[in-house]
Image 1 (cartoon, rainbow, N blue to C red):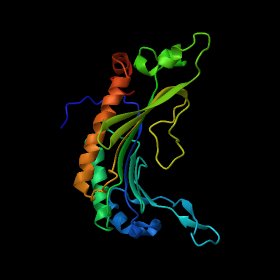
Image 2: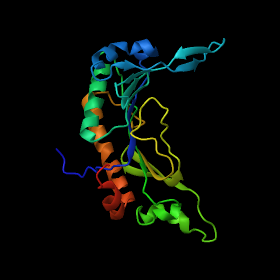
Image 3: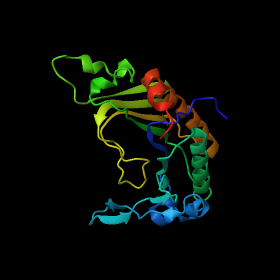
Image 4: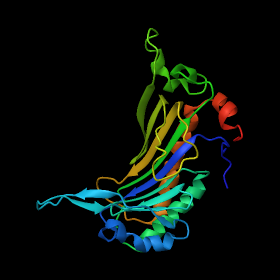
Length: 265
């Protein structure tokens, strides 16, 4: 259990986990991950049509079109996993709690590791993308009061010109081999494509404030750690901490009270 606040009207649109690893030939092509699919069939029973990739031979010759990694989907198309020879990905557009998402990550990692040898861990990442929308907010300056002024400083650069969009990014050092990349800005439209493989809760357009956080760990240059499900989950727990911290620092109590804590209609 956790005592952290879970907002009933959270602006989270997309969450992803990624493990990058040395090439695992057993997982190459869409058929390589089929043994893992059998173990995940209960929760991810749908195999998405494979995306084709171009393979160029080092010995010359014409490029070949090859099927890409296997993508598995749940029946509501709000959860998926991509299993390939160099990466394992879990994505969701219907996220409620980190603990629930971590359970899915664990199931996928165990299913893959029980069917193919994962030789090491190169990078582990968590990415959270929020599209904050507030009724009445039209221009970038309207975000004053809702967003931390530290993220709106460029709006005051020259009062003669009205900002139409305002974006920025910052990389934070969190710990040894661990960083968090924050991309933010007052934007228009959307960043998550509703025509992608996952279904979105809504396909809203219009002004929004983006908070896109990529929290990641990379292996040290001197050694590649051995893979284990338990170690990966421990890293994920550490990666979650700066995600929550940066999001809460980016918003104000006015946004919390007037928008995020409001029950969904």
